Amino acid sequence: MVKKVQKAGSSPIQDSSTLVPSPSLPRLSIVIPCYNEEEGIPYLVSQLNVALQKLEQQYAVQLVFVDDGSKDKTNELLHRYYGNDFRAKIVKHEQNKNLGAALRTGFAHCTGDFVATLDSDCTYNPELISTMLDAMDEQTQMVTVSPYHPQGKVNNVPAYRIFLSKGASKLYKVVLGCPIHTYTAMVRVYRKNVLDNVTFEADNFLGVTELFVKSILKGYKAKEVPVELSSRKFGVSKMKAVPFKVIGSHLSLLSKVVKHKVFKSPL
Image (cartoon, rainbow, N blue to C red):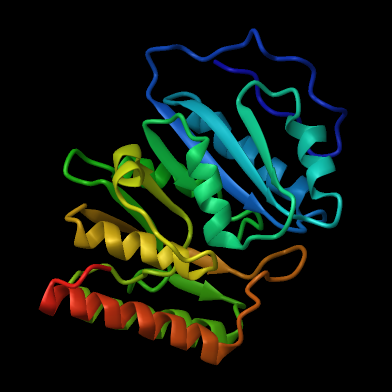
């Protein structure tokens, strides 16, 4: 069993480089993009501590934090909590590049057989990573959280964001002919070979959907886990795009998907 990360508010972690996980365990990388999350980092640490207690019973865990050009104390806090933790890698963008770019950077540093992506604001509980991994069978290459599943739930999230996200997901479901209900959630688990074989171009939030859609079109099978989505407890949302830009970006991707399916055009 590996040593747990320190709890929020405690002193910096001591050197744990000699506490390595069993080489027989499958490897799991968890990518966590962070941008101006100073207020929420202690809460993230406390929630990760709980999730890791279960995950490390079955996986050798790597934590990949991508500080996407934060201007506050995000980077300082990441190093305070994880700077001496052998499981953690902290990568910093000198300038903010947005979510899609942060994910690509994180993926480039992953060593796991499985790669999970997690919101730094914990709007989805980190313990859901275990739930998604449990749903990953031999025929499945991706598992996504799904608040828009009939058994899912949304709490205290602005109505316009739900309208845009849920509406886009319904369109992707129809165009792809895929039974998945949610295409816009970042929190997922992938087999590493998916990320090795599928590329995406969008630097912003659309990158999350683009990666998922392209993976499905390449024949990778996805599952969904009904979950509850809640509003963030700390800080502010980093989704800067105004509604018409969000709509436009999804319509552009949907158009490319239709052309690809009908005319075999490249995505």
